[in-house]
Amino acid sequence: MPRIYFKTADQYVEFAEGEEVNVLRMAIREDIDVPWQCASGNCGTDRLVVEEGAENLDPPRRRERARLGELLDAGYRLACQTYTRGDAAFSWDPDQVGLDDEDGRGSESRTGWAGTG
Image 1 (tube, helix red, strand yellow):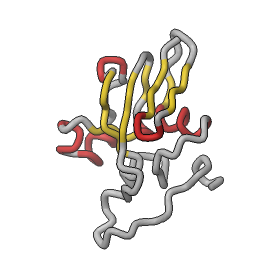
Image 2 (image 1 turned 45 degrees about the vertical axis):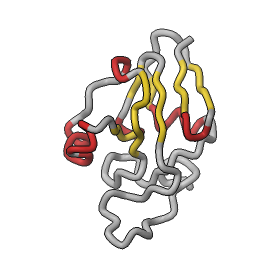
Image 3 (image 1 turned 90 degrees about the vertical axis):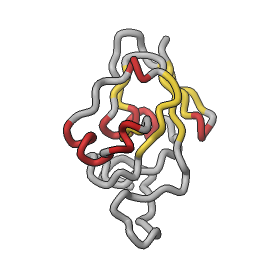
């Protein structure tokens, strides 16, 4: 079975062979503390560093490319916009905030799915 390793939380999540799964949804389903706010590619709070398995990820969509800009070239992806079909590993800064948060405070990250947390 393929699996996602959420390195910062030191947790693995397995999924069925042949499936393509959304990284943020898998983290939320398994109660892994990936920071997030909007789950739609707008805030950038759920940016992750791809540690391994980039070849198993879907290509970045237009919204993700626009949101991350040069961070994409540095190995970042947005968990809410990223799907994987095989093994992958990600890390993140647990205190990160949205990309547009100029004062550094940010909003509290949610602990439930969009609109429920």
